[in-house]
Amino acid sequence: MLDSFDPADPACWLGRGRTADHAAILADIWRTYPDLPASVPQNERLARIRERVQAMRPLTEEIARKTEAERHARNFVFTERKVARG
Image 1 (cartoon, helix red, strand yellow):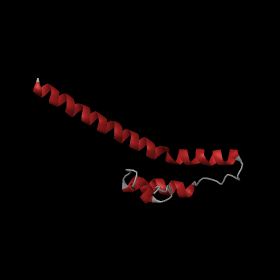
Image 2 (spheres, helix red, strand yellow):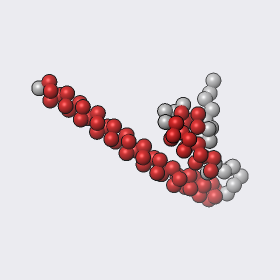
Image 3 (cartoon, one colour):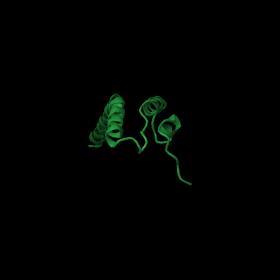
């Protein structure tokens, strides 16, 4: 069975590993800036995508900062353990 993708539904994002807060924000952005139908001129569809990307930018930057901080913490623990073992 294929998994349907409804980006306007927070459950869709929860199922893809996002936190509840992030899932709610993403779903709200997709409800505010949904894809336009193929019958709409391409320049309007592309403008909509750009608007959605712009709306998502603060969230994606927050996620990137968190991911980088977690990576640094893991690296520190790894190095600390390696030094402790000699």
